[in-house]
Image (tube, rainbow, N blue to C red; front, side, top):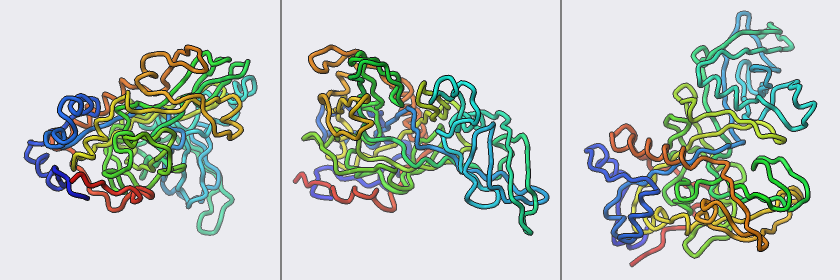
Length: 398
């Protein structure tokens, strides 16, 4: 770990949590503390920093087992409220993707890419306790002779349902603009022509992976807030990339690390798992996610204390550059600038629009803080680092 002036372990912090003595603050509060007393003293004072984000996370979905039928069925096509689920797993195991659209949406024939309902909405409806119509078809075998099955189900009826998201909590993401002469419709929202608006999707100083940019405390097995319940980090997310350009303080300047996460769908809250529709793009799922960061030393405290003015992202044109894979940007802007409501792009003042909710992110950090202070959630020692994180060991301060 290096010779730090402050050294703690997760076991020591958990013991303080059990005794009700742990000092737990949100990432927003930690920014103020580090500014006032510095990272070393902040590391002495604070034991845990809580983070939060609430944003559309397209690479999300649920593994569901809908239970054996009589006679038995080996489903190879399954629909939930008209939304196809992937059935190439086992007899009655399926995976429902958040961006899978309902079949035969009449609106899509008028506006291509516009789907009002999809997998994310089905997941939300299940979590909200609503009835969902399931249809399954099969080709029939000796051990699974049934060829059709239809039923109304609720989440309580399902023997097994877990949220398993291949890519969540993107460490940083682009600020999107449109330099063309026409309005375009993207997963980053509606972008007006000639850079009339700039949309961004990261919570800045509350965002989980921006507060531990080298993933020194977040690893495989880390317990987290996921959808209003306790979940876990199970691997690096798809598109995970630790080798990105960074500021002198270690914060990434471009999209970087991502997480694969899992949690019990039956324990989740519909406030934190919300189906969304994006005009011209399709469906998604807004996910509430928060990660507690144990303050093991002053280096962790320094990273956790980075404020919006210390965190930056790149401005990218989504009309031509992004769809054509062109790696250029039109400036680097801080989250403080983005949250001010305007940035300057190509000498033009451009209004900014968040597509994630900072208010909800703050609420998640507060909920997580409350769970830990009450002893309802202990921290976990990762069983292994996230791939790539082992390239960045703790630096010695002594």
